[in-house]
Length: 262
Image (cartoon, rainbow, N blue to C red; front, side):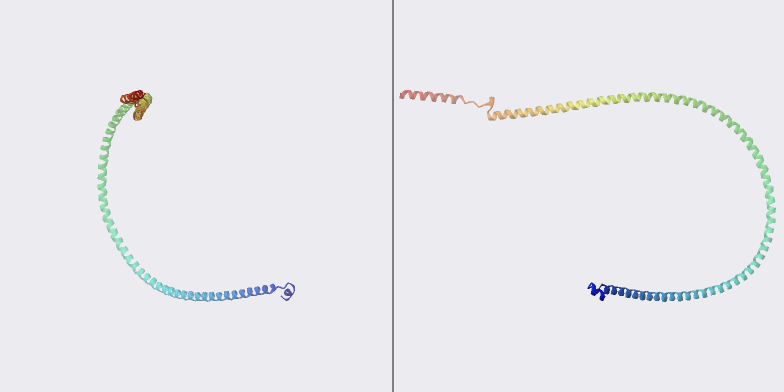
């Protein structure tokens, strides 16, 4: 710093040293803070470890008690199983003997039922033969009817096909006639529309002529009234005859007086 003061007159080296010391101090304080936080975390983890150990001890104790309880239950179940096995064995022997008795009774009943079934089977065979004969006869009748109806079907089909062909031909003719009528209708419609337009034009022209005639009459009446009021043209006012005669007499009188004086 002394060299810098002597050479340049500044003290940036001091400022730089101060900044470095501040950074070191800050890093030192940060290290202290991190160490304190680490100690707090270690204490918290130690506490959690202690709590976990206590929980595991309690859980281990409960499981040991559960194992002892289950062992007692197992002993009880074995004793019950032995007792139940003896009871089931005796009950099974009794049921077997009862079942054998029931089976012998059921066997005798089945023998009786088998005899009845054989009798029914013989009756069913006899009925089956009769039904078969009836069905054969009925089948023959149905085959004859089927042959008749097939022939009738073919005949009716041919007739209906002929009718269908005739209807198709008539339809084609009707379509041709309909097209011709449609063309005539379009032509008549055009003529009607043209005639209608011409009539409308004639009516419009007639209305226009009436309007023009009415306007001309009104103008003529107005002009005639104006000429009459203002005395124009042939309606000009002429002097009355009396006025003319008075004017003549006045002129004559004046002439006479003048003569006398003379």
